[in-house]
Image (cartoon, rainbow, N blue to C red; front, side, top):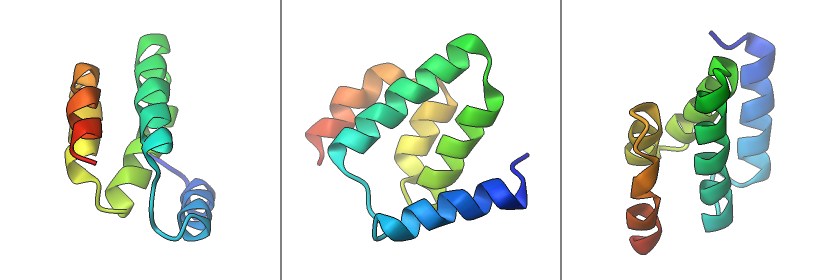
Length: 79
């Protein structure tokens, strides 16, 4: 469970990025999430998922949540 302070940091980043995300950021989120899953860092996974959900990237968040990292090319193709 994210703390209020962690959520506030994520929201500040979202506002700074004008509620958007670049293709490069999405690639990095896939890489970071996969690495976090491999090492068991549930907090990092939750932060990434919270960020993507908040800015309405539900499909991409669903892929991360279910560990479908191989779908990244499909996501990129549709951008």
